[in-house]
Length: 72
Image (cartoon, rainbow, N blue to C red):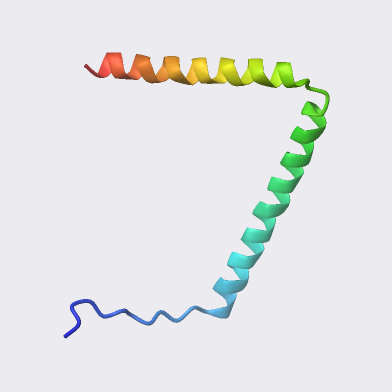
């Protein structure tokens, strides 16, 4: 005996094409933004990347500690 029966959902062709168009739009925008970011950061040295990574970790860590402290 099955407790949960899976319902067969009918997907209309128009909904499927809409999802495909939305997915392709999102991928195009993602590629465009990735290209723009690569152009902006292509001249960064490894030292600069390390400094940015450390600053990011300190910033996010500080926010987490702040949120923990105010929640107590």
